[in-house]
Length: 211
Image 1 (cartoon, rainbow, N blue to C red):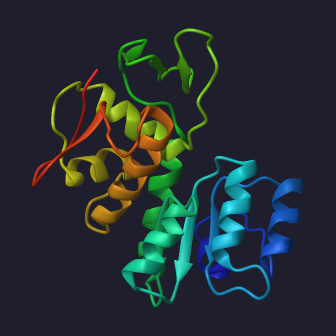
Image 2 (tube, rainbow, N blue to C red; image 1 turned 60 degrees about the vertical axis):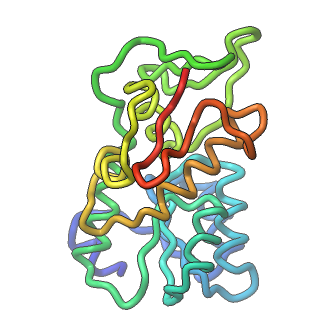
């Protein structure tokens, strides 16, 4: 992986285990983190959660496990995407480029997108409460997903549309990415995530945001 990515022009910092990776990241923050689930000592899930607590850096889980439970658990731990081994380096490169594109500012949208007691400011990359102005922490992926939903209020967007607009690809896409990130978003924007009022599921079609 290192050789293939360096050949594409990336600079790579490499760590042998989770503890070393967290220490290295604190000294030299990266643009994208690749984390294997099968690590000595601290496993990839724990490493992902620890990294997510200190940074919104895009994370790709790299794993030999293709079981749905493991994939979803990795996403729930805070990962933005995943790739299962064995894979071709072209696929990994496509996923990394898609994540890096999403770090750029969201395209032309209204200055402020409001729903409930929250307001979303795409140009500032901020989600905050209207009353006291306190910010709601979101990862870059969660923020981009919320912007896409909020830019088309009450309009249903399919998983495929969200994969294409937020993750930047559809061929390698997986609807589970969208589902897990929607669940994470609901814990941050819904008064009761179990009974969502704003981010709604439209069975057989996709998701919509109701102001």
